[in-house]
Length: 309
Image (cartoon, rainbow, N blue to C red; front, side, top):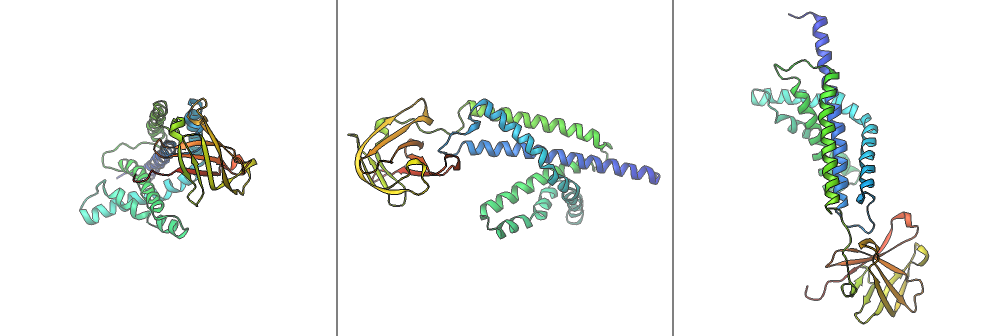
């Protein structure tokens, strides 16, 4: 029978290894999840070009994710010291109580149960049901992965690893995972996964565009334009005035998809201005900035679907 001091030292080593493993797993998940979230956002339709569409922008994003992973550990300390060990202990108890032996699949189930208050709290804060469920599932998955790594340290026959050794092992694999995901994200951007506006032609810009609130701008093939209730925000005003009238329009392809503009000149609306392009090839959209350009507020017109489409 081991001496009390030896037993305590062994428990201390095992606890340190579990804490180190949990911390590094959660940190790696934070960085990888952040990169994945940004990659998803880059594929979504947007009126402005993403700063990460360039190589330097992507490098900045990765560095930002690493910075976040340095700040976020305050929360990870709480999770690694309390929640992850709790999940490991409860999963072991549930496996022995209901299955006769410990099994790994009890870990994700217990993690989901432990985090059940999360969606309730989010719904109480008036978050959407989908957002609450996604947050709960993602959080439960993250905790479960950390708990599964920690659980392996407690299995019979596993070596007694110190916190320092576990820190190096998990840190190496976590760094490799982050570098791999970052490289895949960079390759995806290079391959053109990020959204960019459709490349229109003058003929492709013809059509009736609506703001969804009764305002329409019609661009005709002969170069004439008609505005009915479209708001004009000349000088980056925050409040637009309704514009009604006729005039002409022109199209410029610029130097690339983000530089395309539609210039509509309406005689009775001197501040109508130039419109930038985004959307899709089938349903292009025109937009202008509202108020301060840094506010990222836009007035958008979407081309209406042809009759019978």
